[in-house]
Image (cartoon, rainbow over all chains, first blue to last red; front, top):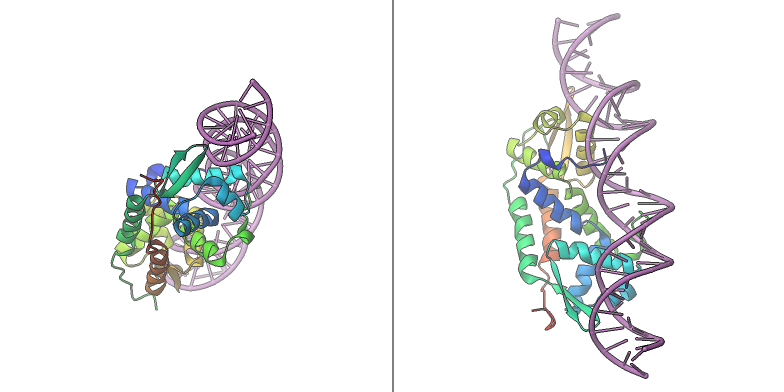
Length: 110
Length: 110
DNA sequence: TCTTTACATCGCAATATTACGATAATAATT
DNA sequence: AATTATTATCGTAATATTGCGATGTAAAGA
């Protein structure tokens, strides 16, 4: 136990959940917000802005990079992170496919 | 450690992350999908449909109820669960406020 | 070359999550 | 009243996540 039983769900369900999951941490929401506000940033900016250690920020950045919502470009000794607009919109679209389903409610629910 | 440092983030960031987090599990995505398809369901339906134990389903239902996206109505010896349309739309709206921010990209990112 | 800066990764401790069996509570059925 | 059906909750084991110090790497600057 403690292990999510991914095998019993569809690829779509697992995919959607994994996207939601990455966004399900306030530090990662804050990082995205900061990158949007500043257009771009480096890891150290975030260490100063949020109150988390460099190793922690780096780990969160990695998870965001994994789903493609941000990208990092090496610039000398630092790495410039910014939003991947295409993925940003695609992920929003995936969420909206889910949320735009027509919800009909049974009589049992007032 | 292992403890999210909520104090250092804004209420909005914590709120948004907590919503994402609840949807960040395939069982909960599957449960919502099933309720939408069937209009309503009882806990036992889900136990049969997904391959998870009754206690596990009940726990997931509780988390979904906590954010208000579903509601449960007692009907004799069972509980009828269905989507709370209002909350469903409100949560989608909250996500879209986040995603509809204008994303501008710096020159460092190709 | 030596130092500094920026970052990623490793290893670990603390905490959280997931899943389930067992049990309790409540309502319907016999 | 006894049984059955449905659900919630408790306790617990297995695993995952979060956060950080320490360490390694690579580029820039002295």
